[in-house]
Each structure stands twice: as structure tokens, then as C-alpha cells.
Image 1: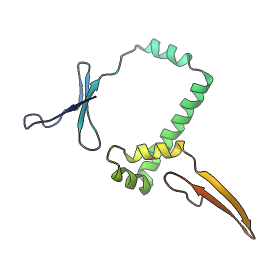
Image 2: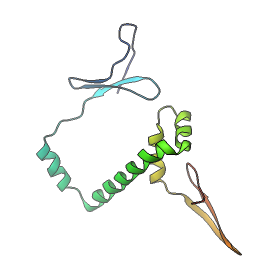
Image 3: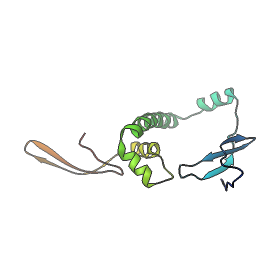
Image 4: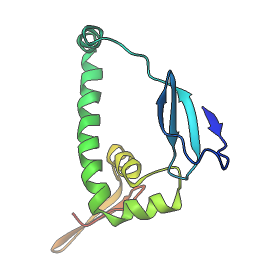
Amino acid sequence: MTRVILNGTVKALRGKTGNLVFRELPDGTTVMGQGPHQKNRRQKQRANEKRSPAQKVHNNRFQDAAWYASAAAKTEPVYQERADATPMWTAYNHALSDWFHAPQIGCLAQEPGCILVEATDDVRVTRD
């Protein structure tokens, strides 16, 4: 990607011009890149049919992760806090990443009336 330096004449560039795409990143910088390759609808349908079973499973997992991230980014303040600390990531990016990385269970201990679990996660571990 090419970085764009905006002067007083041009305040902002966003969108597609020819085969170039201009977009603004969360930290305020503008980048320019090559536009997406256009395929017609029939080619897209054939590409979907050629997916392996593992690819289809991953696509379904990613769809579930996207659904979770779109809701959690708006309702869970921890993702916004992390996004504020990392300017290139949004709250949605942190929620999506968190969905794919499950908590790691360290040890389990049983006491009278309760079970103690030691777990670590890249974002947060809750009681649920």
C-alpha cells in the first residue's frame, strides 16, 4: 500500500478511482491500494462450489465470529479500551480475535461446594 500525504488543497481521499482505492485507517492516515479484482457472478458461484469441507467449516466459524464481534464490540467496553490503546485496531478487530482464541485452562481444583479453575486469556476471563 502507498501512503498518501494530504496537503492544504486536498483534505481527504476516500473511495475508488479507476483501479485505485483510497481509505482512511483508524489512526487517521490515508493509504492507497489496488482495487479488488472483479469477477462475474458465475465465477464466484463456481469458486464456492470448489471449497473443501475444511474450508466450509472455517467459513462457518468465521461467520459465527463476525456475528459475535459485531455485537460484542458495541456492548463490551473492554474491546473499546483495547482499541483505544492500539490505534490500528478497532473494537471489532479485538472482539473477532478474541473469539478465535479460547481461554487456556491451567489447573482445576475441587473444594467443598465449588470448583476452582485457573484460566488465562488474551482479553479477559469472566465467571460465566
